[in-house]
Length: 291
Ligand code: RRO
Image (cartoon, rainbow, N blue to C red; front, side, top):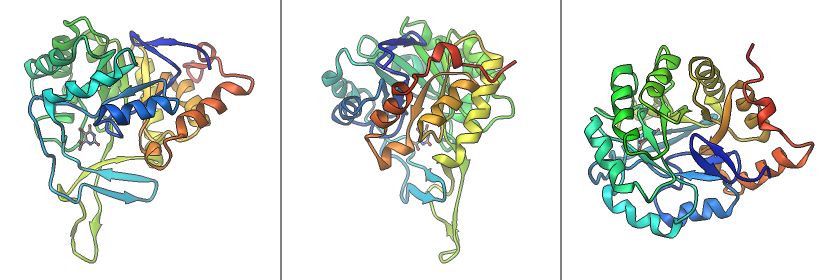
């Protein structure tokens, strides 16, 4: 292990983080992921009001991944209780809102209780939230400013479902973001040929898993060119070689989501692979595919 590192203002135990959404709804599940070798964890996204989520089916397994339309289910302010067992641990609270004011309000509930924030400007299937905001540079800058004013390290998670992700990353940087995270899920759908209707209750959702890894690498590469703040990679990562590739594209740390569903031991497995051999030196390889 490389020992503690600092990325986007947050101290991490290693370069691997739990991505938002997976095992992130309770303090106990987040503690379990940390005990299994994650260098930091990101919570399920928390918003301005309690929300049960979309009607089911909410999730469909497809070749190379998962399509979800959970619908931003969360307990809102009550989530603060879950953080009590995680005091002192590297926990990034993912938050969403529909306006800069809502982002500020939600962040306020958790400031002092979180190592940092990850602003979710990128859910592909949430009317008025997520990608609706994250595809507009002016709104991205405003929402980011509303939270960075609190003085807590703030990362901004971006959607791949835009023409120019670099321009969106630059807007987050102007808003004072400490890092950008790329990417959230890719907008997708499946149709049941037997039932002649979309599989998901919400009709469409977001694709995660191995199928989106090349999209995530391209987005990290674009953001490394467009921004001066650190880029954190996310999307379809399942091996140590994937981590090295993401770092070469420009990632200073990497988040893992879908692969954790199959194997919570993946953090230790990958960390052993990554750090044991001749040892990767992130300072040497981050962004080395550029130029
Ligand atoms: O809860 C969800 O449906 C969800 C969210 Br908030 C998100 O950011 N990305 C995603 O794929 N699903």
